[in-house]
Length: 119
Length: 113
Image 1 (cartoon, each protein chain N blue to C red):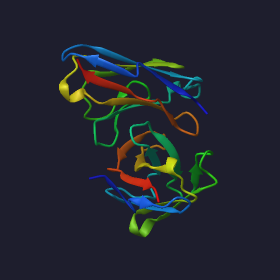
Image 2 (cartoon, one colour):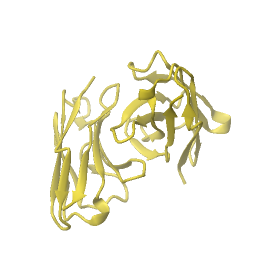
Image 3 (spheres, chains in turn cyan, brown):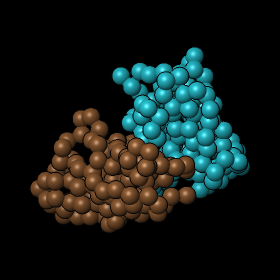
Image 4 (cartoon, rainbow over the protein chains, first blue to last red):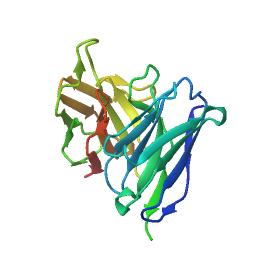
């Protein structure tokens, strides 16, 4: 069955770089695009960026200067790196699968990983 | 960016009631090329990740009960939940996928009266 699972450090110091991994199963990264979405505690959802099935990447312009998304198809993993973290980057980070047909709604979500930015 | 405005922000209901959640977009989500509205609805229960309920404004995702009904077109959309059950208590988000950045409404929290 389709699964996505995020992993990474729970605590990051201000100004440091966040590195997260999304490991997927049940589908191929060469057939489906994967997105990252985050949710600050008690707040709404923010789309961060997309790793397209063909390897292209797209970013939210609000984060583009700090964000990088890459992948390793052999390991079925998508990576998120974001630098210059601040306290407002404290959030649950989700990876999600884009629906088949490249329409950008999300039919499967990972459980999320809580990242706290604090010294 | 397309701004998604949901109302109300919270709603207290009794089991068995019908509820309506509204979502308004700052520009039309109707694509003339295929006459589809690029609007999805998600349900997020406490401590869980969001779950896709509706896409194309009115198409239910597989396995979603038929008491969840999406409607609307252009800039105004509605999620109706008929005969609310206790398991429906959650936060509901609309999302536009018409243009980047893909944006979500602030959410509507459904609570028990």
